[in-house]
Amino acid sequence: MEVKEAPTEALIGGAWRRLERRFPVVSPATGERVAEVADCGEEEAREALEEAVLAFPAWSRATAYERAQVLRRWYERILEHKEPLARLMALEMGKPLKEGRAEVAYAAGFVEWYAEEAKRVYGETVPSQFPHKRILVRYEPVGPVYGITPWNFPAAMVTRKVAPALAAGCTFVLKPAEESPLTALYLAKLFLEAGGPPGVFQVLPTSRPAEVSRPFLEDERVRKLTFTGSTEVGVRLYEEAAKTLKRVSLELGGGAPVLVFADADLERAVEETLRAKFRNAGESCVAANRIFVQAEVAEAFAEAYARRVQALKVGDPLSEETDIGPLVNEAALRKVRTHVEDALAKGARLVAGGEAKGLFFAPTVLLDVRPESLLFREETFGPVAPLTVFREEEEAVRWANGFPVGLAAYVFTRDLSRAFRVAEALEYGIVGVNDGVPSTPQAPFGGVKRSGLGREGGKWGLLEYLEVKYVSLGL
Ligand code: NAD
Image 1 (cartoon, protein in one colour):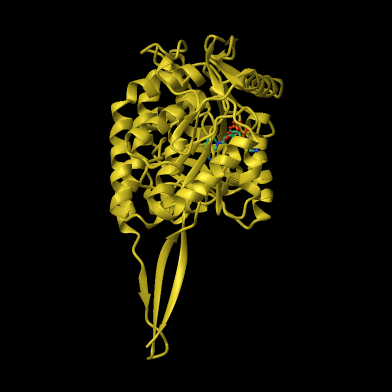
Image 2 (cartoon, helix red, strand yellow):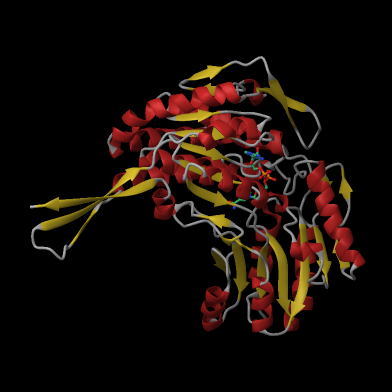
């Protein structure tokens, strides 16, 4: 079993720190303990903070080529270890193996992209209004960074933050989610094997996130906080980080709408909406949460969609055939159940799924879901597809924009004018037009409104870790 080879200690400086205090990682599929992991507290946090500050001058002054070499080797090792990483994710948070492999490739993609992009942090010169002056603009790393990641994408959420930070010349201390620390620790092991210097990337597993985070939030020398998780926790951390005026990136809750127009390629709309909804059992911040279908094609879409959903295989995340694994924990199951019961009580019709066995919730399709249902008002984070019929484009856009969040939205149409019009009208950071999975390392990922601040991925992800310095040169 790979877990025996996976590190379970904290990575502080360049060494694994064994701690007496441990916390369990439990498989949501079986309820069994997968591992006992070092439970860091304030003391370890303070130590890692000093190491990150100590490592910063050398790492930030290394050439971009030197940093790129470390990242490139890390990328290669991650790909070589695709299988153990996919198995760790299946064990610690229930992600089916085939999805785990896809996530590792996606996660490695960020490291590859930023290994290359590290060399292209170009400065600028700007024409001055004075003949005897020259204006130079250069980009410099912001400083040591503290990052917090969630459990739903235990590999990709780590590399999407760490790779651009390291490429920019920052050092990084990571606090992974308590449900999924093993993948993060394994990635850190691969980083050391790739020649990553001590203190440049450190990992603090803990069951006490607030205690470990406090020293980083309070310290002036930590110049940036990057967080992915719930809006509630994100807002609290934003307030804390304001006291030392840190740069802040927040990737928060979603609740994506899907708009299927009558002029869409229906088969494609069904397939892409299936991926947008049921990838990662719906436990994704860009998961389709509300599906609006135009009246003319509503019945045909619902029928084809339900048929495809019923063919999805629910089961052991370690089995090659499985499409849908368990939900992450009891609280997640309760939320999904409450949302379905509430929709049914308000008049929705169940056409597929609806039942649970242990933490395994059957992929579910509901028709005629009322807009006031919880399914439409909150992020469900589970394998439930609520369908509602709309008549006019304007009505669908109004419904889609009528929420406080704005991460991802999806539009299906073959009308080019409509594609542009609706994509521009949607108040979301990401719009997939005839595309159910737009996330990719080269593109900006992030939301507006209560979905957060900043972008990850592409050149925009690198800017989050760079300060602008203006040098005025008098001749
Ligand atoms: P969560 O906010 O409870 O936990 C996320 C992380 O924050 C974990 O590492 C947790 O330990 C840490 N945390 C919790 N309380 C903390 C505190 N007081 N101080 C410091 N750290 C603390 O979120 P969750 O329920 O685990 O994750 C699901 C949420 O994350 C969903 O709302 C989802 O939409 C969002 N999410 C967003 C993105 C994105 O990129 N926008 C990606 C994945 C998940």
